[in-house]
Image (cartoon, rainbow, N blue to C red):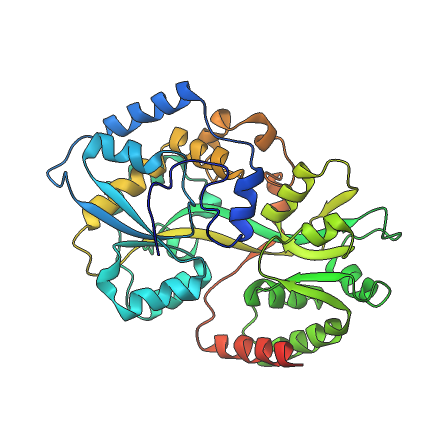
Length: 378
């Protein structure tokens, strides 16, 4: 579907089913004020008007996963519009591009799904000289994989992690690790939640077992599948949306969920005794990236839009709109204090040293897919 006019924060896009990020938008901290938006318009003007004025970039994106008025401000300066094409699942985005490579000029993916698309030969090489804000502002920790300077097939845009949310008034034991999560599941049987996300859930099982979170070892992956099957009798639900709601209402007491859902549940329900845990044995994580589609006639405009997005004030607007952590230290001074100081949405750097970012697994992906299917059918 095409999302038009998606430049307002908060309750935009409510006709689309709530997703992990759409839930956050309903409870997010809000966007920049009028003064901040005027400042962003000035940044867009600095991008300059190029000969491609009047062109349209077709962007396959997670619904409204963009800063407030970012499309509008970019168009005001350059005459280049951005048409957002909504596809909320990585596999859906890849399918759209494979069915019609001309359906889009750029796409939001993560390192896992981006690697799949790249392996299919559909990702364009970027000229990072045209994206100087990447070199100048992006934290080197996120210049990784496809988004590294060496590979130059993506820019990083945001990141997140999967951890544990639990009710301290309903769970008497301290929870500090995935080992605790698995150990306590039988005691709280029927009150355990998992997100319905193959890479994240399998990664959590691998980390619980002490393995690499991106293991390509068939035996290790099979053991992770066994661990998930042992957990299944105790699971209340595999949540596709609204990840934290069942911990809020008490029907679940502990859940494997994403940081965005944890932030939302805690901020929206200050009277509920919710606690977020960054497991000591490691965390699954993802790094979102923007890629250009190979063969697009809009590559120069896509690079210009990427560079605009990575301006610190524009990045901060994105962070404030979505209540996420920044990938740019220079953006932090423009980020709202209640987001910047929230330890779930914006953890200290030491936390991310324990994050295992999901990666493309090549031929080993079939082992993960087989174990996920075995878990789902058990």
